[in-house]
Image 1 (tube, rainbow, N blue to C red):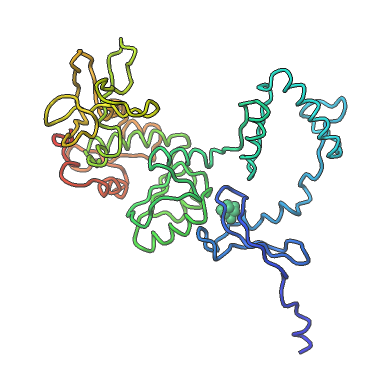
Image 2 (image 1 turned 45 degrees about the horizontal axis):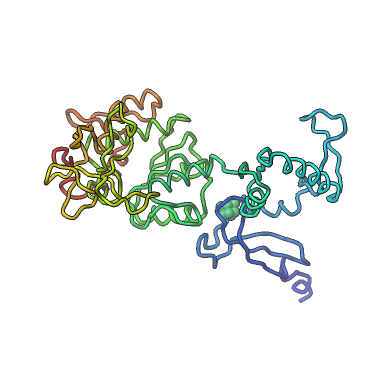
Length: 388
Ligand code: SF4
């Protein structure tokens, strides 16, 4: 009994739930406190996104509170010290505020745009942006690392918006998951949960990454890409998908601008712009609705998505006034024509194509090819002659 009484029953007397911000994933966490001090942090099992999973970086968030290395007072460069010499002296907050107010007042009174505000990664960007706008400068920015913003941008432009806490790849319905352009392990705990479920359900996971740690270590296939050649891989993949007719024509017609006609008259002021039909109401000048398809049934230009119309995705045409036009998809095909797998291989040997059949090249990974195959639907997706 004496021994039991000596054991402290709990390491914490209070637990606060909040979200982690050691990276942008915002996992739900529990902060365990004892006598008002943080003892440790773990994942919140009731949080809908991370469901209790926490990474090492998240659990080390305690150092934000207690690291002896953190800054606790404003620092001012020492009188006469060279910039970059690292010679500072601590000053009070009052001194710091009055120094800033004096400098900022001078800039605001002359040219507020000379004030550039850059903040690190924090939860305050809405407020710091508001401050900059009120000050009168458009020059404000915040942390946007190669580890995350590139991924967000790619996902927004391809699958319409997806970024950690706002969503993720639809692994519940996928059979193959290719991850590329992801900085080492910089992704959310929800994704780790999703990949685990995906693999248990038989999904194949391919990781394209120069190093084989983190996600690559648990991938079914690791493609050791040469750093900086992701673009070459993607261009060659697009080339192959088009060359083999592995695209989903119905999807392209319905949801993308693949069939929309582009002015290809280099002498025209509208060269490279989408053709607009003047006789059709543009509806919204910010987002005009009078773009054109070239209809396969009537062999003439029609408003996009006109009832009963079906656009050519490939080909070259002339408008009634003689303007040469092409569907956007045709321009894409021309653009990627030279980006063959052999071209990509010269940039990164990991992309070694290999012969499959008499005349086609395929990626070294048969799984990578099946990824594209499983996306094609119906007879029109497979044949060039019918997919035009
Ligand atoms: S992934 Fe890790 S660092 Fe990022 S929010 Fe979640 S626990 Fe924190």
